[in-house]
Length: 311
Image 1 (cartoon, rainbow, N blue to C red):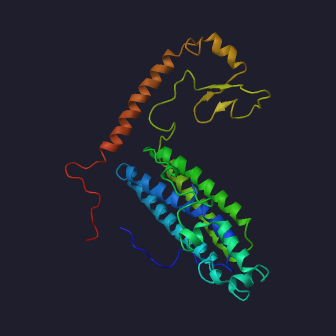
Image 2: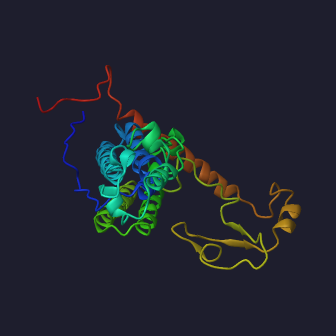
Image 3: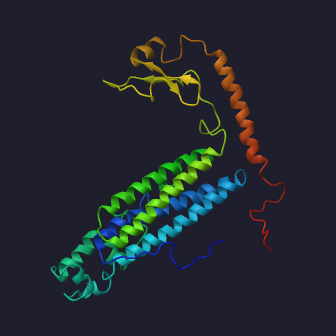
């Protein structure tokens, strides 16, 4: 159950109308890295986490709800930046607020053109307001959402989502000198960092959480890294210990020769019988653990999502 409080989480303010920046800010309203996408992603992921991980369900719903509040902040800022587009802008005179903001140098037609070129949907389709589209006018799409049904996978996805959203806010800051907007963007950007650390802590609290999913990696192919370009640089990603796995990378200097000699890696020189049996045993154990995790959390008989303990 949602209860809307009309006061914003952060007091969004703008110094002056700016339809061009309003258009850019649409990326965080209806874009693939925006607040609507984040809110829907975490909201969707929460359903699968409800029974096996009720604590993570609570976290996902809290963050999803906060993302909806951030969407409201972004939408309110866009609306304020469009002040005049649907009102004074249609009869812009040199004394109108938007003309004063532009030092009175632009003619009425050029101001209208600025609003139209920024995004024709503002004055024409939406009547001067934000809409769930990005800065190019492309409608928001459910394909922006990643929900894979495995909480460790989803949490890793969320780390990337928060990282991308933070970067977008950083870029947006470069395109406005309005101190009030900078304050708003700084708040929103910082909350992305907080959410990142929350997701990181949640992932670390689930053990084991690697590899993602249930099945173990096939030991026959796990350690190989291939020299697939001229001048490949060596580093901790292709030499030394594979962190946390007690194994070391094996660098294949000549991948073509290795593939030919092993007939497409179907006839390997090493005997992996012992490792394969261990992996098979681990697969069975993890399958039972993961399956029981979900089944044991499901209630017997009639299913009921809420308990209404507060009544």
